Image 1 (cartoon, rainbow, N blue to C red):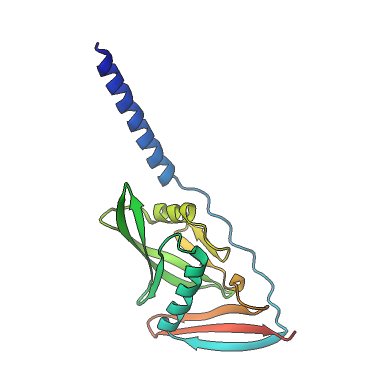
Image 2: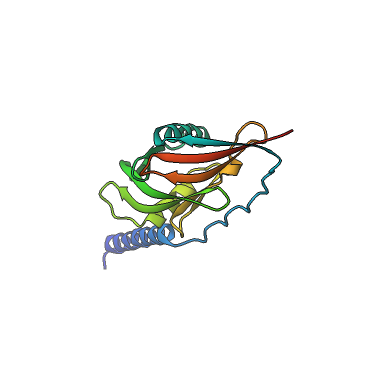
Length: 190
């Protein structure tokens, strides 16, 4: 057999093995990080109930997201019938639009969980858990955002938001249909 044929088939075999390895590495499920423990809320203070709209909440959220990712990835949050995170993902020098749809869930402790309902990545069909895994591994997110690919959700720890002083925020209700978002702000007496 010709040495060039052997070299060609060896190189083709190595390339196929690397491609299969990368696909397995990306699509393998990893254990999601545990949720942060519920921090004790200092109840000795003043409580302020804050009613806001989707537009106002969207503006506040985008401000915090821009500060957190510092231009590493263009991420934009939109609130309509659901919560929409849009971005771009570059794959083999092609930029693909990425849209992830989430349903907001308010936990008992006042934090938010964004449960993924659907995902669009250009014309590609990719499992949502894979996209969340790529997001988690490619962008350094702030401590108040925990991406959980296996559960297909993003946990938002509102108590850990960088707000001046010891002010803490809790979500009471998120009703996108009625355009009503109720937050509770606790200001300590100190």
